[in-house]
Length: 114
Image (cartoon, rainbow, N blue to C red):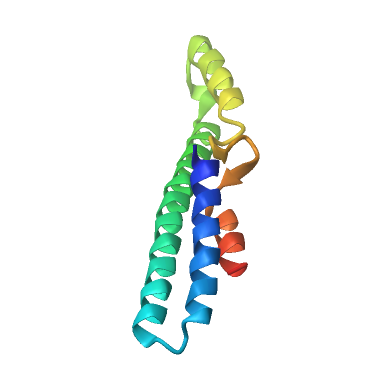
């Protein structure tokens, strides 16, 4: 779903950019198109920001688990800790159509292309 939404956003941003350039002699139309493009970029930013927060917080879980003084816990707790460390080794990520990871890196790549 996000992949489709991101693709549509990028297509609309491109189209409004072309429309803005062709309407440079009409200031109100030009600024309307630029404002719309900026609003779409802000929308994409907030989606990427939330996805980046998910990545950061899930990485923090792994970091917190590896800093636990496991040697002071019971053997049952150690087994659970090992399992949890194995499960949190890879951070949780949101993907767009299982094609690319949504993050601030991908947002910066997309925004630099426009």
